[in-house]
Length: 66
Image 1 (cartoon, rainbow, N blue to C red):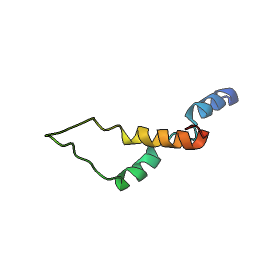
Image 2: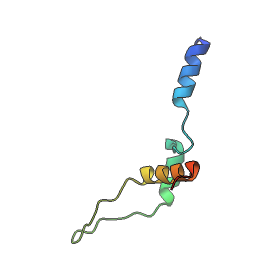
Image 3: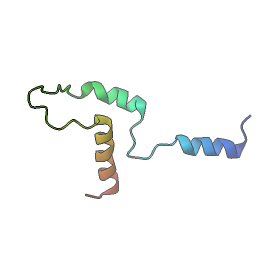
Image 4: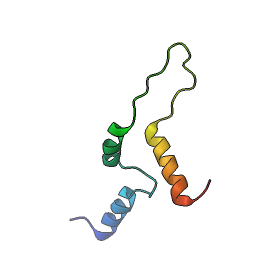
């Protein structure tokens, strides 16, 4: 049996911040996002990771900064 203090530490470590998207939630969201292919002739700037962009948007909405 896990001691109460150890259990609390593990639980707090596993908690997500309000703006963090869990892997399970991301697996549900990702199929609805459009797929983009890079152009070979004018590639431009590399795309950012969609998961990180969503977390950034949620952070701004949660904190009210902007």
